[in-house]
Length: 116
Image (cartoon, rainbow, N blue to C red; front, top):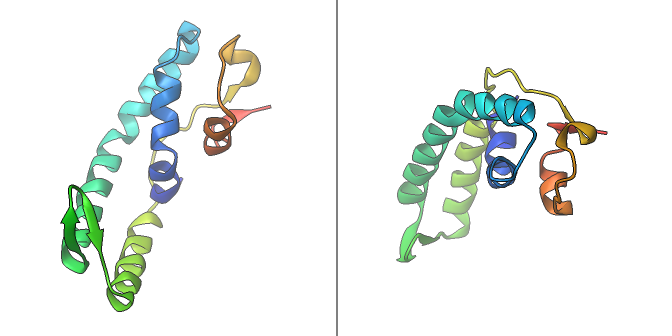
């Protein structure tokens, strides 16, 4: 699995983990979350370093970049996001999830995890 895909869906995965899930699904997702946690921490650290390198801090956690720096930032971040993450992705079906309510946005971001 690509690190960029994990980073993109991190909030959705955290939202799913916060829901009341059947115990077997909660266990699978908790184990998976621990497997990827360190990868996501490193991703955020490196992304922040790139923001500091190419951007100018203009507010609380808000950076601005000129076009040239924005392009360089995107190119370097893409190299990070293309890294493969070794983790056993659990397969979770709609039936496994039981009667939880999940937003379409969260579902779309977790299409690699939740099967029909």
